[in-house]
Image 1 (cartoon, rainbow, N blue to C red):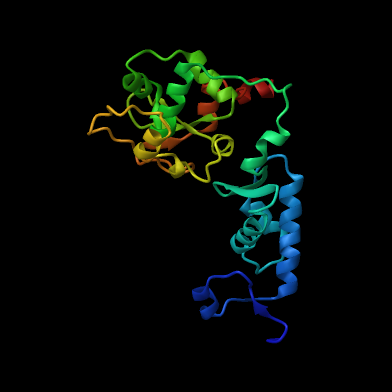
Image 2 (tube, rainbow, N blue to C red; image 1 turned 90 degrees about the horizontal axis):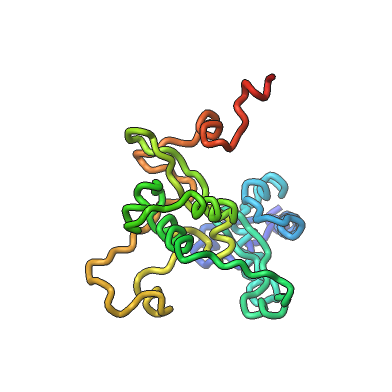
Length: 241
């Protein structure tokens, strides 16, 4: 049995020293299955789903890391989006697959400001967005961002009125090529990209948002009743009628 097993290729030296073993046949089969699942899906696919389809006992994280390394220099790359995976055209080849027929929709300045505030300050309420911007935010601006799939309802703040909190979605990470929300650029990166002027106040602070699925201490999850109240679901009473 020992001869039939090998160290999983590509593992860091320290992990090999611990003696992590895996049947090479299972590893190869798991890679092929994971590769097929991601390739066949139009949307990023979760590690949980992949793990339910590959042979038991195989570490899905290591399998996906191996595939990611394999595709790193190919025309398509395997990219991680939160705990999901997807194939994407290599960044340096994106111009090849672009067509002149594609309609590029640009966000308004207000929408860009609101998106940036939500991304960096999430979880954030509409009142907090308006306080940061210093102007009132129209419902249409938030609707545009939610229709694009980049912004979502996160929960409800544990304050009077229980206002809804907003956050970014997995589609937002996917569109902007981010593995997780903490990969958003900091002050120095924004300056280097010319997105911040050189006269930025010395006390300017860019917050680090919490994880995509982590609720803050003063935030409650969205319930069925909340979705009905927000007009996202038809009330059960009406459905029964």
